Length: 49
Image (cartoon, rainbow, N blue to C red):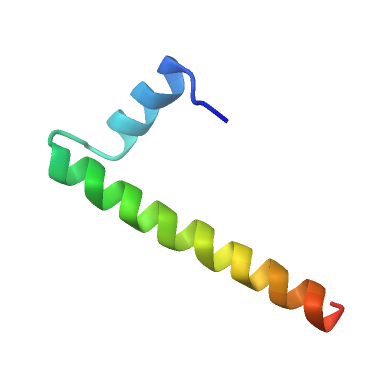
């Protein structure tokens, strides 16, 4: 799912992004959170919660 330009602008302003390093850090943290949620959902499905 692609983000609209307005959504991207909002993410940039909300996270005070001003460099490539800031973008990398945001993506790394977001990926970590998404992966954690996916793993927890898979575990819940496996255990039958």
